[in-house]
Length: 265
Image (cartoon, rainbow, N blue to C red; front, side):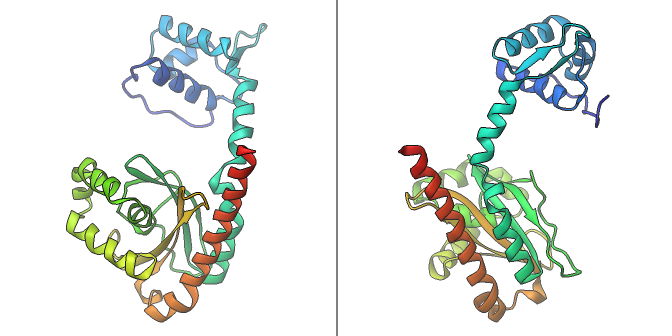
C-alpha cells in the first residue's frame, strides 16, 4: 500500500537519476512493490525498470522477496542512513534550536549550503501566536535570499560570491534581489557579524542569522530566527536574539569540529 502519491512527471535521464527514481518509488511503498507497480510509478519502461532494479540488487540497495516477488529497500540503504545520521547537521542542531525557540518564542531555521543554493534542513516553531513560517524543511533558495541564506552567502570568499551572483542571476531576480542589494547586505554583515533580512522575502516578517563555521574553517550551516517586524527591534536583537544565536552556533560548530577530528584520527 502506498503511503502517499507520487506525481506523474517526465522520467529522468541518466543511470543515477533513474536509480534515484526507483528508490523514491520504493520509499513510498512500506509493504514493497512489484515490477508492474514500479513501472507505473516511475514512468519507465518495463525493460528499464527491470535493469535498474537488477543493478540496485547487485549493491544491496534493493532486494526481492522470493515468495511474493515484491521489491523492497535493502539493508545497505539502512546502513547508509545510520552513517548519515552521525553527520546530520539538523539532528545535531535540534536541541540548540529548541533552546532558541523557547528563549525567543519565535521561529528558528537551520539552512545548509548546497552549490549555489541554501536548503532549509530544519525548523522549530516558538510559542508566540503569530508565527513566521517563511521557510519549511526542504525549501531551497538562491544563496543571498533570506537571512540564513544571506549569512551563508556573506561567509563565502569574494570569488565565490561573485560566481554565485552570476550563476543565480535570474533566480535572484525572481525575488527582486540585485547584486547591489547583496553588496549592501555583505557590508552590513561585515560590520555587525550577522545577516539581516528586513521583510525582503515576506512583507512584515524579518529574520537575523549567523553562520556555523568549524574550527577548520568549513562553512556548514546558518542559524536564523524569524519574527514579525514588531518583534525585531534593535534592542531585542542586540540583547536577546543575537547572543542566543551566536551561543548555539558556537555549540554546533564545536560538535561538528569534534566530529571532524574524530574522522581524521
